[in-house]
Image (cartoon, rainbow, N blue to C red; front, side, top):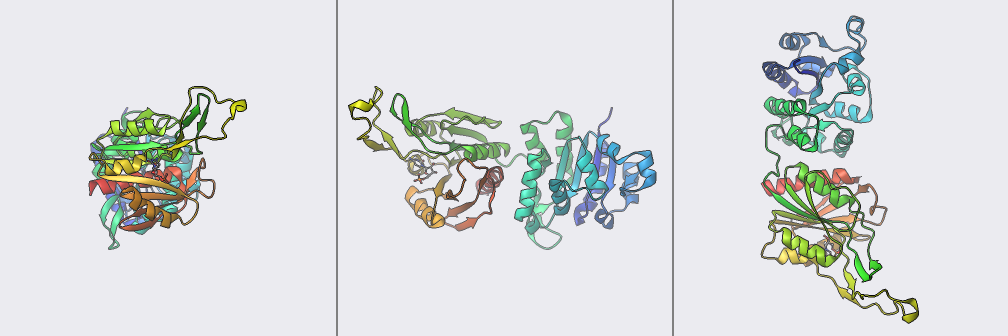
Length: 408
Ligand code: C5P
């Protein structure tokens, strides 16, 4: 049987492009049932849409005739895929919050089918922390959200927020209808027929703590969980890059599509980083121990003086070494965990380490091991202050920022 789409059109100027999308879908042999929000009816009429879909167009939650013929729960489940295009900031916010106050949002809450959303809105609305939070929430809920296009907008501004072209939305729909959803396929769906932005790039990432042995049973360590670095590795892989993740001792699962190299000590990490070169970018998230002990072969005994004197030797600075290396990646990003004067210390670190960006975070709260993070990107160009976000959202935004830098 042919594939069926439930197309939800929300109200923005880009709604007119939904007509072209319906035409392309029909040409592809896909059956389309359309739902219009109240606002969408200001831009396209049920008549023009119904003519193209050759079906009823649904607009009203309380339409008795429609409800008797086909209940709204049924409507949300008869399709193979639910597509929201264009998806306004408003409908994305309602979806993220589980609000069901009209037919479109009720169907979205009641559906048990995969959902694809193609956002379209003003650039400021797209970049607003509230929208970015909703997008992160929806992605965590399993909704596939396409990246909006960059360009001139109907409102006269320029930037990301334009509805992806109908051809690109068709590509995403085809990708989602073709097979059960996997991570790679989600990437195809997100970027439509455009290649993912980091395809062909190699990105090297370090994450987690290092363990520096004192004797065969003891080691020096720190509280790094590896969560932020692993999330960044996953987000960069999802943008199509080849990712090498040099991981200190953590028990986190390897993100899909990532090549992982496990290490224990700073010296092993330095060797693994060197071996992974060349790379187009390096993101050094690991909390490398600054010092290591002169490890002994035997367990240190309490009664023989114990740890009264534990001579420490400075570890290699992997980030500074990489920034000076003849094989230096084009973009070298360091992290700085600070508890005070966060930006000031990060600026000093940028100069000292010779890297391009320092991503500074304030770890005076429960950042280490916690789920949220608030960062500042410090570079020669200035300081970007990002709002407090989930570590996954930080990772995705940072991955996009790196993609923009590498593809400029
Ligand atoms: O000097 P500090 O440890 O605060 O710098 C943090 C940054 O330097 C992080 O990006 C970390 O991965 C990197 N680093 C390193 N090698 C070290 C110490 C830190 O690569 N020995």
